[in-house]
Length: 481
View 1: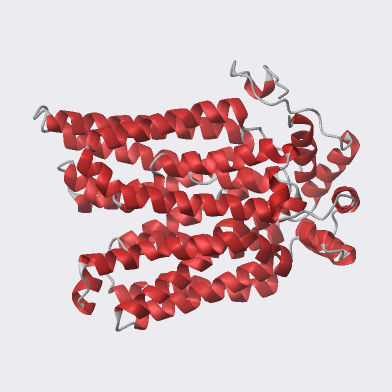
View 2 (view 1 turned 60 degrees about the vertical axis):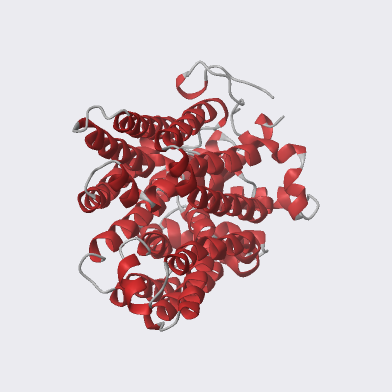
């Protein structure tokens, strides 16, 4: 594998060489000028509509936490039955993840979002009106399928419609709205009934369906399926009526022609030698994200606070309050500071947070510093969750949406999304057993994985800020082994 010691800030660690893109500087400059001249209002509207799916993602993740007692009491569910309800979301999401790439390639990015919204809407309504456990589970399963599709198609759509100088910041809106969704159900769950709380998923489903009427399809997908005139119309709407889109449209068309000249890609083609590097980056980042404890700590934060001797109510509210500001900071820094540095800072923060929490349990087990231990656990989890919101939660999906060529983006997206949900299922189902084995040991394991994430990001993850998708793919191609 080619290496470059001095790329983007010189971390002193070898990483794949990112050569100058094949696209001419003149073309890049022209695209940039066109972006600046054109209006970004349609891009912002398109992003807002797409992240209604991300908001549902967050609501679904957080819904089972504040509603546990109320649902069990009203429907007479055992702890096991409620555990099935909570965990079946990831099963549905895995099915959605396996299908999302093909679905988005066949129906378009808008078509995939429309189908996902229908599944989510149906699932939320079924959950809200359910009288029996099986209807509750089917509703949760349906929502899971929808968010499994959303977890792939939302960041891909945003990456494909955004101008290169805004793509990173707009891409983080995905994670921002996931965090906002989690915070919303945490807070509203303390004052609303669980049936009323399903409106947090129903309303954005309806908003997304209506919003999709107003926004354009991805120009790159339109070009991929041979609709060049529609591609140019969509690009003009996104860049503004007075923007010069000729160079950007030509670059997209040239990229598609190169892809079309290659044999038709099949799912197994993703494992060819030329895709080893982007596949390693995409799957590796998502795996490290999940096995570093992200979803497990989020799902069981309340239980962890109690185990550490801290108020679960106060801790949960603090988590909810901190999600959105941290995600907002990440969005502001994404295009100015870069993906890789922000990812390394975020991963370092998760490592420190897990270490603090592990030490708090060590002190608790030794019956020392009884006053410090709960505060240390609270600090650790807050640092962890804030760091996740800053970058580790959303950047892996932004990177995934940028580094794969469009001919394998569907298959790659399905694999990465499936890895996300499979990892989420494994880490959440093993969390209670690990905590029973050793609370401090559990968080020391997460500390090690988070530390490995820092090294992985420094050594392998490319910097993609300020580049068109075509430039990134040309660079990746020449950096592959």
